[in-house]
Length: 239
Length: 239
Image (cartoon, rainbow over all chains, first blue to last red):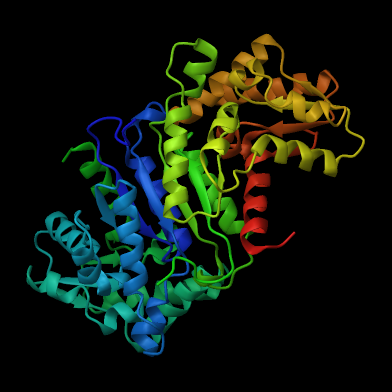
């Protein structure tokens, strides 16, 4: 019996960064799939591995081991198990995207490229975008090359506000975020609006998990939701 | 680099029956894990495969192909990928438990044994238990041998009420359950109480997904939640 029940493609998810963000993505994939019964849903092979070395430690603190070897091992495992394409539901982990993509023989979706292209397509006149993301992502300028291609400037919350965003991300991972932390996060979003951001991107899958808590008058794009839709389109062969 | 980061065990989930039930289980595992950061969570290898042939068609209608070969293939794939033990988050699919357990060299948790033993332990004086489950499960008497061991009689909703439960399960899979269906489901629960059930078991992972919608004065045990706790205990080596 072949692993393939039909022409649909099987997605492999290099997950666990964090574990809840991966579950959130799976839920969004299920919600985005037109389905009347189990069989209409797409197959997902998931390695929800919270033991991947911390991206924050490796990139910001410079003390931790590189997550790359672990991510490569997971990618190869999923490929061997029958995945047709891979995704990484963690924005910051895309620092290691080239390593992972080079290690397997199947396509690996680039969440950063996908998100920036989708946002530009939705907002053709965009010139300034605000990122709500880990400070690690800011440090390595992950989104800049992709948005520069579209002549879009990337903005981050200013110092104290960015610290508040980072505190909230850590709190979501520990599942103990406070009302005050969420308020400070919303001030960071306001700070991006004050700087002239025309829309915001939730560019951290932990912030996607608590997407409902963001209050802003700006349009918000959730990288995780964009990824979910891209997975469904690829698996079903739709546009 | 080894797949194992420490002494914790890795769970393999033979999932997709249905896809949302598997995501629900993963969420319950995450919630049941004492964790302050990503790394404290346990690793889950998940094959969320909604293409497993329908248990309902195979068992009730007698027309569908057997899910066993597909489940065996999934089990072997997860074992090869590094799982230390396997679980099947679908009560009815345990009809094929012996086939799956015999096909791999790692333990496969028996959800039916685990649920009945846990419920009996919590309710030592139990003599009558009510099952809210698929009609397929009733047809094959999946829970009876395990509860007979404890001198506990298994009750099901009477005909029309059982039909209402089955309708709701199908509706949850199609994500279009109505208020009327939920009301009929609650009448089925009342019917079990009228028959003398001392507690109820959510013995279908689709019913676990909508666990909050059940209104009853009886104690309710959710097989999926019991499985989540057993996974965490096994992975962390705790009791």
